[in-house]
View 1 (tube, rainbow, N blue to C red):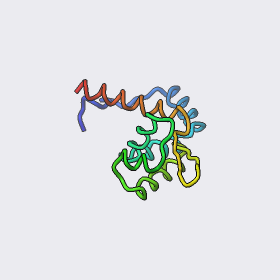
View 2 (view 1 turned 180 degrees about the horizontal axis):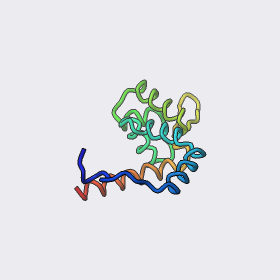
View 3 (view 1 turned 180 degrees about the vertical axis):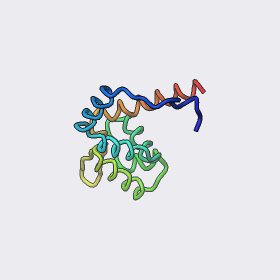
View 4 (view 1 turned 45 degrees about the horizontal axis):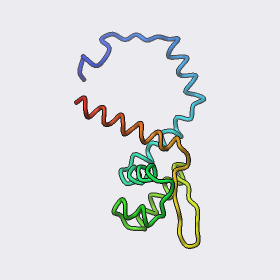
Length: 122
């Protein structure tokens, strides 16, 4: 352990700790963790990014964009759908996917901006 990145003595602000612990009891941290885990997979992150660029895309479009099979793409889309990241609609024999809401787009764009800033500052 590097001594520069840790406290050299043990002390804490009891009021802050208690307040934040109480706040955490009502926040759905587990749900947020599951959402972020779903997008943490590189293929699912690519799908999410692609859907940030267009209102909706059919499974075939997405598969071609990410250079994956229809089956693999469908598997990842099901995972994203279960986590509330994407939604779909059927039109005849086609399935069109879109982001569930603009919050997902914002999360992806903020994460990309953050990553670009981190890389630029290294």
